[in-house]
Length: 428
Image (cartoon, rainbow, N blue to C red; front, side, top):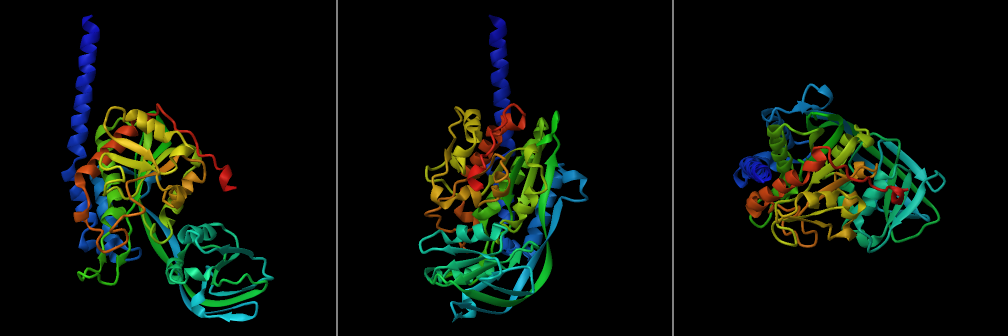
């Protein structure tokens, strides 16, 4: 009887030691140190194409370097560069059944300096009706890869200027999408537009920890490091949108997880740690990143988005987007049994978050790619405001969430569990 008792004691001791080790690496003080830097005023809100996001990139690189991580595919640096186009409207005119539209009712998404199209140009016609979710609908047509004219109901007049700003950046493409703000259902329409087009360089920050026995199988941990930059001062005179929760919290988690797994050095599958740029202007960074992988080789993706505040269930909890689409959530639950932490299904299905976050590109290719979040989509007080600062976040709860991601991912990282794939039939 002594051998089983001794074995049990050894197993309990090992588990206790493991718990001690993870607490030493992922704890509130360590989390706060990273979070405080990423969300500082010095980063000026980390807007795409600004010196502030460059400072954030340099910092993230330094963290990956300190952890001893390797670059992806033997690249010269942790930067994964790519090019985007930025457009500046010069002029635009349109008619709907012979009636002229004002220029501010026209948005053209195109890589061309000159656009001329009408109802005989082979464009598909679509519409965004009153009451539809404006942002997701816009994104759907931009990502559809078809020449399309989209009739946007006039009830979205307040949203339309934001659409014009949102669509000024894009990948180089032969596709043109035209948005017209009108409640009409025209039989005939025509659009002419002139714009300036320039190329600009961006970069994701990506590192890897090679696997031992399954080097060609990847598990991805990711978050986006860009935010909104600066804007109109609020009542307190604050004009910096620090993005502490959105998504310095997710990037902090990625850095903490990289430190943890780098110290463990026992991952059988190759781990990829990615900080994406350009999420706030259309998820371009994650789209570029995801298309560099063979989907069949990606076993799982843990995308982490806004975990700085309590979820609707309180502390020690978070939700997983697309929970029902694979068995990945069930695997995480199994690995967390008895921990006191709970992963819930996404309570905001009407927001379609599964296909709106940085996990979307790989998920659409069948990869069990999910976003983990605590963001209360119906009541997140400081979302996209200058008030999204570190003082509004719960460091203790953040550390608990990051530890739970590390622990729950263990059997996937070890190659013992492989989540089921996403059924993509609903996307066809």
